[in-house]
Image (cartoon, rainbow, N blue to C red; front, top):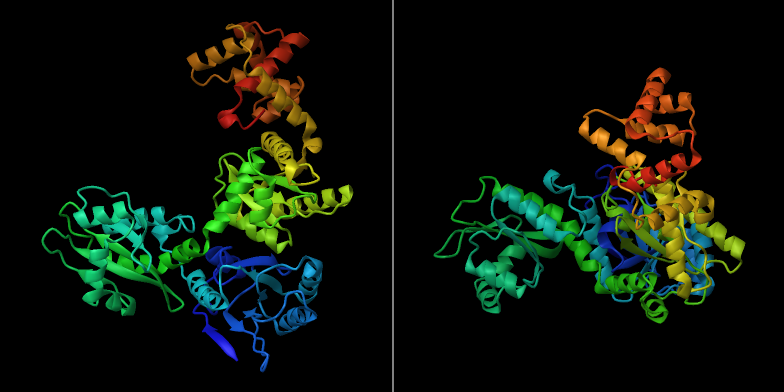
Length: 553
């Protein structure tokens, strides 16, 4: 029986530490890909275990590595069922998702309640054991308070955060002394730092000298921060190894700058930073360039400038099967990167957990999700997309604590139609956000009136109106008289179809106060509220002016 050992996070922290979601966020798609997770992503994971044919013991809450098991075989289905009976967190099969039996695997996973994952082709089983062990250790490590807002894998921001805490310059390096990130501290940097940053690695002669002096042996074997005192032109330095699950991932170097000493607690800060950095370094290492190539190909296609064949080859997507695009956003005033892993990572995980083959592409303030391999029957494909959109809106809203909106694009016959599906998805999302209503998911046809007015307003933005319209005079009056709110009053009155009671309630004022304001609007602007043309022009101008941030149409 082969066993990778227990993860150090067994029975550890609260929240998402030690869960399948946290582990996959840290490890990323470079090592393992989620196929389905019927019990959700909050499943606890406490260790990794390699299936042994001679002694097929399956342990609860551990990931079972099904080495040598053909995922398209009946044996694979039996392994999934037995894993579910034993309470395993999931089963990992070798590369490749056999399309004829993928549904059978998913069905077996659903019946047994255990997740199914696949090892990527560029990560061997031996590497995967180490990566998952390190990932479990990193997933259970609590972040430093000062770095808790740094997105997972953003090494430059991590370097800046550590530099601010220790009062020096910081570089983050891999185990081969290659520079992965450095802080923006450039005040009187020493020559060695300058050469290291310019070459994106420690100069070879310096590496050879440190190796000969036994420095690296001390670094990787030490359990504490190493201190190198200032010598000549070389400033004082601290270095700490970054490890997870017994595996060395890299190092963090701190150097004094401008002749100033490092902060008194710099060593303790670096110890904490090294623990926090483990998840970031592992995430960086396992999110391979292949993922970025897929993302670039998908973005190019969705922007109508890419190749169907390139995306189909890179992402292994069926080019001539029905697909659709979903546009996901969190509304105005909320960053799309909120949450521990960002909306991008959460979308990738939740889509996989729901059993869909997707490519997730960050786009502006939101995220696009290309879903392929849908049912060929139009009604069933539409239903699939709506179910996925509703599930994502519900799950992501609960995860990040803010309302998530999902615009559903039209289902198209193949990847060639993806750009058109993207446009309809983005229009639907824009309408959902603009309406600011209770609905979280919609197609264009569901919000056609809002989509229509948004398109009309966009078209009219190029039209030059007379300078002294009624609305223009009202805006000028409000600007000249602090505290005046005639424009806001007019908008509420028109939005409520001239209903004084409803408009006054919306504004939080007495009906008589609203009537007084309406008289002032007539006096200041000359607006004839009895004229349909005047009311229409006023509403159009109010929409064109918009509200703060253009949130409303």
